[in-house]
Amino acid sequence: MVSKSRFALLAIDQGTTSTRAILFSDRGKVLSVRQKELTLLCPRKGWVEQNPEAIWNDMLRVSREAIRDAQNADLTIAAIGITNQRETTLIWDRKTGRPVYNAIVWQDRRTADDCEKLKSAGHEQNFIEKTGLLIDPYFSATKIAWILDHVPGVRARAENGDLAFGTIDTFLLWRLTGGKVHATDITNASRTMLYDIVRQQWDDDLIRLFNIPAAVLPDVKANVADFGQTAPDLFGASYAVGGMAGDQHAALIGQACFESGMIKATYGTGCFALMNIGTDFATSKNRLITTVGYRINGDTYYAVEGSIFNAGTAIQWLRDNLGLLVDAQQSESAALSVPDSNEVYFVPAFTGLGAPYWQPQARAAIIGLSRESHSAHIIRAALEAQAYQSRDLMEAMAADCGSESRSPESCVLRIDGGMAGNAFMCQFLADMINRVVEVPVVQESTAWGAAALAGLQSNVFMDLTDISSSWSCMRRYQPAMDASKRHMLYAGWKNAVKRVLR
Ligand code: ADP
Image (cartoon, rainbow, N blue to C red; front, side, top):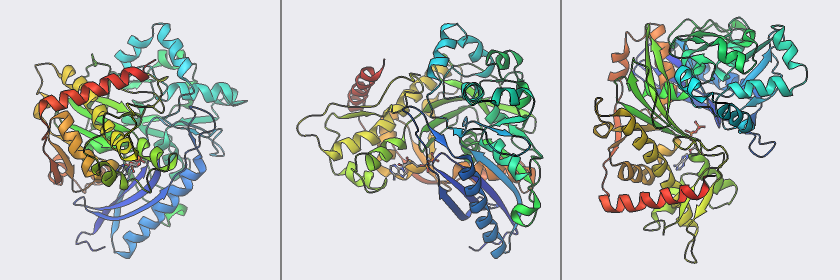
């Protein structure tokens, strides 16, 4: 760990499957990575929870290790940036700091029926126009309402002002500042279904519709801001928290997608593609969502987003539930051991289908099995599914862009996340979406985005061009599949999806 610079930036990246603390140089070079795996709890079908104390303890442990790494290398941490799994919902007691219930994870589908009721009552258009979102259990609002309605005594305590709501960023910030700061950033707020992203404030009508006491809501700040100082007893010294953004937004920043039309996609547990659409809010006509990309220096940039709920989950499932893989990496050689998937399609709708289908009730399926099918075909189909799902999103984005904007066909796709390390998946993706796919040198785009935000606040960086100039490409995948094959394979996917829609 050698660095010529005196300053380092610490990113806390609290993800769905792990909590990490990553130390970056002021050039965006990764100096140290500390990581702890996080357990998902699935107490019932469709329910997904996490233990908030595990999240907090893991964060403390990895942050302390990374701070020690900085000290050993004689580096000063200029500021901390936080990025997090979005929408995951917590409510805690303001006096004790103790959560009243587990964190309800973004993948949780327990509020699917509540969402159906809201849709049937004709509310969806209102949500689209104010929040940019569609009504879905994915977002925080129905999860908050569920905790208020199902955990004994919680509603009364919330109405008394004794409880605080937060996504993971807010919970960590609250505890990091010793309970002094109850705040989120605009990107995390924009995922709650309670925040008007056009007027950029909590929306009273939506809050009332969910019967959520306004007293539980955090302050909302820009992505580069003074988020407070860490309590001195935690790390032996106090550090400024200078940047915060939801994971996908942080990745948009880390991938330097600052121009309208630029797209990044992160392939982790889920897959999330965000296209920067500039400073004008616009709703999607193709069942994508609009979200705040980032707000920096008084300018709010919007993004169109396609969310795929299950990407890497398919590989995890093949490894853990079917025992077909020893580890995720092995999926690459398995996929390459067969010339094609032998017409097997794997629709990984384990927790429903996200954009552009929005079918919380759909469930996964492996379709097209024949007597010749074996495990390599299924593994290959699981990887190919990521490309098909991405194509679904890219088509919707292209249709949304219309003719006035720069055509997304002319853009490359910048990708990151655990699955971006799978060369077979990347090439098949380039082939299926018929555009160049780029993997950056700094593959920790999400953490780097958070660090970059902290760097802007602490004057390590002057402006966004400093961040753009630190981006460089490590691997570029050129589309190489002929059009007729691409169309035929994709038609097979569309057919497979039809079979799981309810
Ligand atoms: P998250 O941030 O959502 O926790 P990561 O970006 O760390 O996720 O990616 C982890 C996911 O990616 C897991 O679901 C894992 O199965 C999958 N994954 C990791 N490496 C590979 C690989 N080489 N090939 C295929 N899938 C992979």
